[in-house]
Amino acid sequence: MADNAPTMQHGDEYVMIFQGGPFDGQTDRRISTDGSWDTEVTEIVNQNGMDTMLVYRATGVRQRGGQVQVLYVWDQHDSEPLQDPEDRWEFDI
Image (cartoon, rainbow, N blue to C red; front, side, top):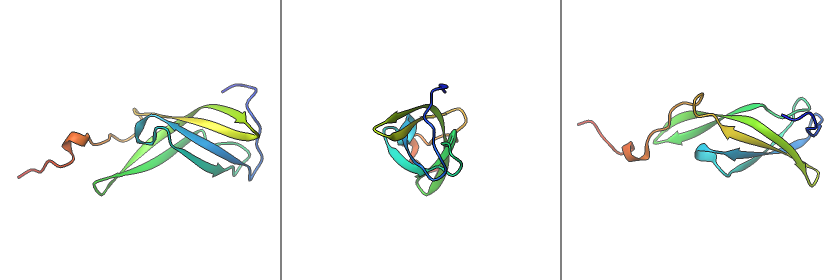
């Protein structure tokens, strides 16, 4: 990320913006525990009672209106595979 990235302090809030995967377009808010933002987050999606871990990596950061915003992009390679929606209701009989 750029050298001119915004600075944060312990306890500051930042906005997470998700791109790609099941969380595409969603946002979340986090509190900084160490004066920075998470470089990687793992989100859990539940499909038919089974949890799947998805990895999102921080790829950009900006400050808008006094608020730090961090873009997290889905890392499909490092995430667990998602079940194809076409296969969700197939049963082996």
